[in-house]
Length: 189
Image 1 (tube, one colour):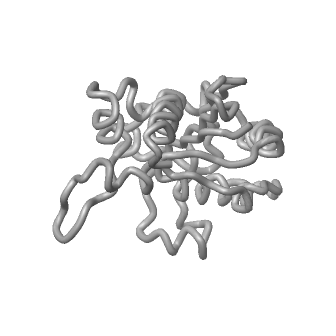
Image 2 (tube, one colour):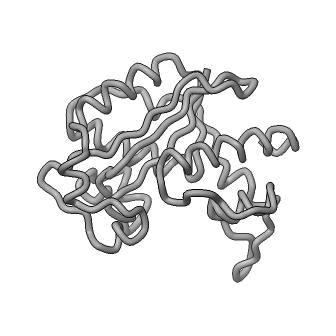
């Protein structure tokens, strides 16, 4: 079994290096979704949680992207600790993690786990990144080389249709899963 993950956050860090060195500069997790899959593609379970903010607000710029307001999250959100405990159980049974820009999602989740004191083996698991793996497949030129494709760009390249439900964590995890299996079928991942 493996899991496909996606998060929605309060924003982006200034530098990826800051994620590894200072958890306080890491954006906060607003929502998380993951799908438990068998290697052949069978979906075992899926999970989606909005996180109840604890001493932070969701900036309007972030809400404009994923649609989750601080008020929504306060009313509909779950406590971070309980969500991470459920996620921890899925991780224990997983042989690897898939995501689009998976390093970002892993760093955000790891920072949240660190804040709560929950031990997650997320950084130790092998990972497969659809964003990094598909750069040459998408061939989107920028400046002096190919840029990393967005999930929407990759989805369109592989399937010829726009990405459904973009910036909803469960919808994005589902789309990422479809991209993963298509990239695997094409021998790219």
